[in-house]
Every structure is written in structure tokens, then in C-alpha cells.
Length: 102
Image 1 (cartoon, rainbow, N blue to C red):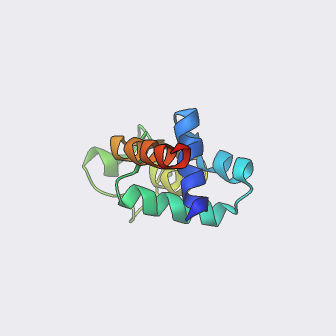
Image 2: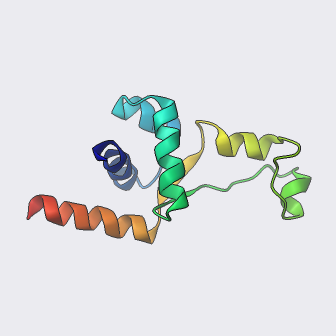
């Protein structure tokens, strides 16, 4: 679990990170970083920058891009997705810091 918390701490320090930056800085394989980010996003501790491709018809209609694999879906799944802590994530980091510093 410490690897996952390291990821959250680095994101907290920087106010957001690209997945590739996390992998490089923490010397963790990109696939591991992607797994952690997916888990933290699904539990509400992180959020992805949902900047989308302006020409994407799927997003304009509120659909997911699974069918056409357009640029916005590729960006979301790539190592260049930017992630930020949610309020819930910030609370977790503060609580862990308080436990550590006692």
C-alpha cells in the first residue's frame, strides 16, 4: 500500500501530475501507476483531467468513446492523463501525515 500512498503524496505536493511523471519520479512501472490511478479514481480519491478533444462527436452527445477510439479516449487512457486529488484524497493525505508525525 505504501506505493499507492507515495503516488497520492506526490500528486498532493505538485497539485496534480501526469501519469508518466509519477512513473519516472517514483521509479514505478507505468502499468503499476495506471493500476493505482484507476483504483484511486474509482474510489473517489483522485480525478482525471477530463479535457476532451474539441472535435469529438461522442463527447458532445454524452457518450463514451469506446466505439470509435477517438483522440479524447486515447488521451484519457494514455500516460499523459493528468490526475488531481479530490477533497476526499486531500483528507486522506492529511490524516496519514498526522499519523506519521504523531
